[in-house]
Length: 221
Image 1: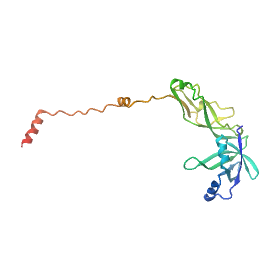
Image 2: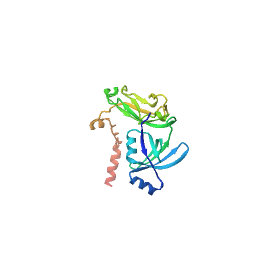
Image 3: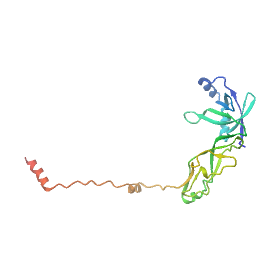
Image 4: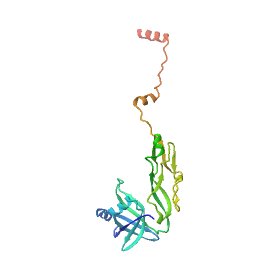
């Protein structure tokens, strides 16, 4: 079962932009709680505790509102214009027995010692997450992708990943996850110039003798 973190929420009586700025100045993150056919509730969470939980891969959280605790999952996060600080969060009420759709990060294993790295290649990651469906109680912190046997020219797609029992892949099976390509050797300036196509030679039509004589005659007039 996914690990959880306990957060104590405060109900926000005011939800205007001015009130939201005040909440952030107090070191809290404004959020909204919805789901299970209950009325959405505007709350605020301690920014440090919430962010720390996210950094440790916590997706499922126990949130206490007015002494009532419930399990919630982080459904959406909004960041500032720099993409650095969280300025708003959407939390959805869940039951640990229900199945939900979640986005789970991918963790590569064996990239440093992969077969292809001994063949002059480099492992390249093309996707860092997969969307799956599973029970709330079974939400994984990450999906491990083993790449130690990948050689130069090989690739892995979402369809190549074996998910734990009870989990269903929702991302496209054709989603490219990992490739192993040869490391391109750096080229010198001379090599680049040698590979460049030569400039086409400009050929001018030779003038006939009589044309030259006519020009001389015209000059004497």
